[in-house]
Length: 69
Length: 219
Image 1 (cartoon, rainbow over the protein chains, first blue to last red):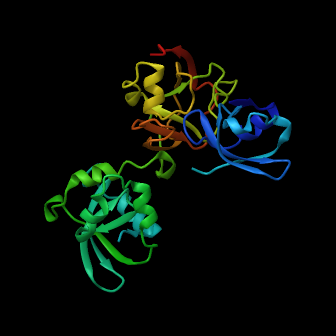
Image 2 (cartoon, chains in turn brown, blue):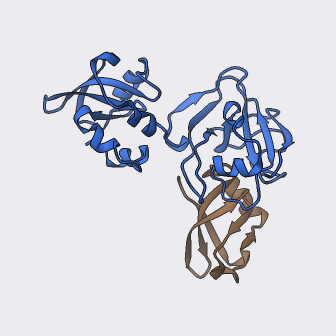
């Protein structure tokens, strides 16, 4: 499933290099303290999440950490 | 065991011609005063000839793995590039391993009138700025490599793109001479084979250097 990010997250992601053409890999830090590792972001605006995170909302995100390739 | 080289040794080697694409034959004097002939990959890692087949004969061992396995710099005392006739190694090994991804490649500069392409599933590609530039750290490919791509699906496979949507939008980048880039080969990723040429624009590309949008068929 895909989760559309708000513009402030997109702005942050665009300040970091890509992982490959058109995408980045990130660790998602949730406000609960949980970290979801190694998630793809397409075009700096869409998180590609496993089904188990179908309930996740963008408001739950505390930080996005762009992985170095 | 492969050996990483010092910055001085790397600078010395990259000022000299290659033996083949991505490698040089050398004679190395080691810190323990032994001496080996062997090969240097990408100007930065030395493999003694007696270790070449063991290290590079594995089908899946790529350049990243060789670098990870390499001894830290300092074991090699001195290096001298030797001619191709002074050493006979299976060059098939080097052609394979020299294919490092762009993220591990040294920075080079673009030439005058060089052209690059970027494939995207998105008409509103966020890495292309509103004034027609590229943001720092943006991936593209060479115009030459783009000739291998006729459809959005082929672009997804060749550049290992993770999106479900075919990359049917094509941007053309004509950066100024001496724009800083890293050039490498796309590694398999995202269940795609890769294998295309990838070029990272280290500092991006200035305004009015990106044109398009062209479109190609999805399949």
